[in-house]
Image (cartoon, rainbow, N blue to C red; front, side):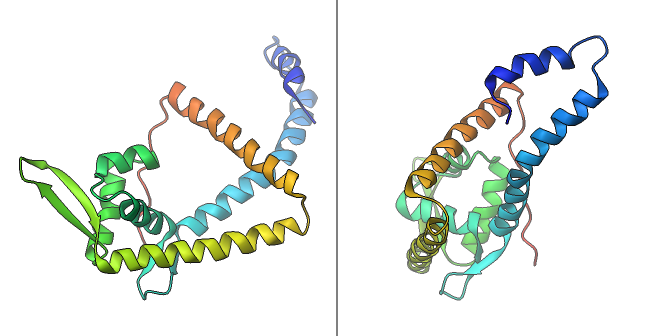
Length: 191
């Protein structure tokens, strides 16, 4: 296992005039083998996020659509701009999601009387029902998942996992900011 103490030694060897190919390969294999599960998890979870689910209302939604709907339901009058900050997505990507929610009769847009450019978002009755159905689905699904994980991991290990995920997310977010990595444009929903 490579830790922080190893990073300066690794950087020194990699930045030498002629890095040893066997060192490069061995170090890569060690790191890659350990991180492979992260790559596989992220790709699988990405598929899950963009797959549609019927939460019991007859309206299939992707995870990002259902969570956006729930955010709007929990924050009536929110705006697309506020959603872009929350989801770290472009205005275009969020607008597409909101438009799909509106087309499904789940969200309504209301322009402010004194500022026609400011559009507030609200859930419709159907949207509030779908948001609630999504919350119930997530409670059951997350509880089931944590139960299955709990069969192989202790509560402390599960807490540590979430703590590490928070720190890892912070590291990645910092990298995005420092390297000015653009926000994801989103993925078009397959029809």
